[in-house]
Image (cartoon, rainbow, N blue to C red):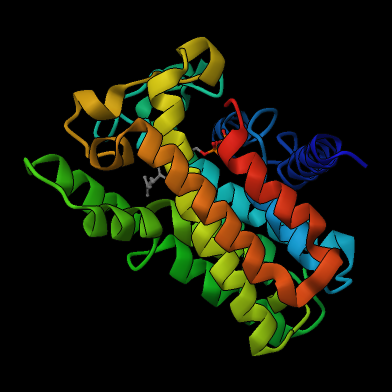
Amino acid sequence: MPFLDELSNTADEIDVLLGRLMPVESAPAKRVIEAMRYASIGQGKRLRPFLVCESAKLFDVERPHALRTGAALECIHCYSLVHDDLPAMDDDDLRRGKPTTHIAFDEAAAILAGDGLLTFAFEILASPETHPDAAVRSDLVGQLAIAAGAAGMVGGQMLDLEAEARESHDLDEIITLQGMKTGALFRFACEAGAILAAAGSQERSALSTYADRIGLAFQIADDVLDQESTPEQLGKQTQKDAEAGKATFIDLLGLDGAKARAHQLVDEACAALDVFGNRAGILREAALFIVERKN
Ligand code: GRG
């Protein structure tokens, strides 16, 4: 099946699953579930769940287990977008082509929807429906907590906010903060298949290297898109990073240098998959998609 069809099929499956996991009718607090559904269902490339599912395929993991793990990760990603868009952070009113959650609802509901999605992710992973082996579930919970927390995404966001106040930035600093802010969730996505299969350290480490490279390539591509695209194409405001004084890879490498670095990272990511041979073809296509995508 062509890569884009595969990506879109997984996105549809994640939408159906999230819809099923968050029913409004039976909820005692309907408004928070409505805000959680608004923030998580119906849009988004679902790249992270796709990487979970494709890494899981390498080990013949059962599809429902991979999908639930991908849905949990997508909940964390969506919570981060909701909170990042709040007035106290980036103060954005457009996300995924529609009003941000605090605009569509209100700030309190958006904060609670983010909190609800964050905690729901761990509820999904803790369920035996995600995996029958409690040790595997515990590993998933632990690794996702590390990826999302102060040593990962939350810490990266803090470093990013602090960096705004500084005049000069260097490449190592930006690589570290982006590796935490966006890279950590990619790392979990790619390692999740190996965790679900209780695979060995060689395979896990190959996926971790792949994830590091595509995570960085994703962020560089994000900076390039921010510079070259319109809000209509991206479904969110553009060029806000430069206005806020955030250092981007383009500031440090130039536009052409940034694009060249992204492609070099794709090559390195693909090379890390050699251990899986032809079975990793889709993950190689995913690496290329990450730098060539248009939104
Ligand atoms: C608020 C705890 C907290 C963290 C925020 C990840 C993040 C940290 C903020 C998101 C802001 C942002 C736009 C970062 C750039 C990278 C990124 C995560 C882009 C959006 O991801 P895509 O392109 O989005 O996968 P879709 O909508 O397709 O899911």
